[in-house]
Length: 209
Ligand SMILES: Nc1nc2c(ncn2[C@@H]2O[C@H](COP(=O)(O)OP(=O)(O)OP(=O)(O)O)[C@@H](O)[C@H]2O)c(=O)[nH]1
Ligand SMILES: [Mg+2]
Image (cartoon, rainbow, N blue to C red; front, top):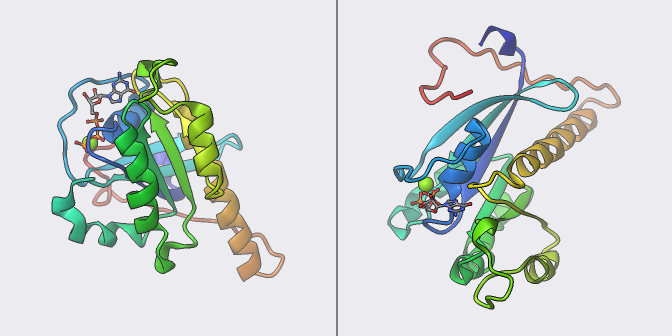
């Protein structure tokens, strides 16, 4: 941890129906490999140390939110501190796509969260069959999501295709926003420093490199 004393902290809240692959996507990004049969934990938190293209240290806090209605009342307490919402669906499960649009997006687009950027992510592309009209193809998803003016990415937690890109792009976008806000709040003086001193007590138990 000693090289990460000064780092930019980003928090992404990751949501979507049960079983769409939220944990698998996070695990694939952390470990660079797929882990089948991850144990579902309703509100799991992952901390990843990373570097961006400018070699800045980043501490990425990924908060998975359970899609189960049993936890509906608990969800908002995780939303307020988010820098970004990642709404995941499975491209082989059209219900999960419908819910991304008609349930998760409206829940995360209420007044108090309007300013928090959102990204849609279609997972399980390794299982998508071009001729299966129950599956969500890229152009269909793009067309629907475009209307909301939201970025759309696709990935496979199993093959890793698209995984790095989504987190890199999301981090880049949020860092840009934070820098712009910082400039606005400080005239023209760029003092973008999120000096996150990680102490021993703060060190999360699930830190994986
Ligand atoms: N083939 C394939 N299977 C995947 C992929 N992502 C996840 N899975 C499988 O889909 C199932 C659900 O994945 P999870 O990562 O547990 O999904 P989740 O959204 O975290 O589920 P909950 O936490 O229970 O809501 C597991 O059997 C995974 O192995 C993928 O990209 N491709
Ligand atoms: Mg999970």
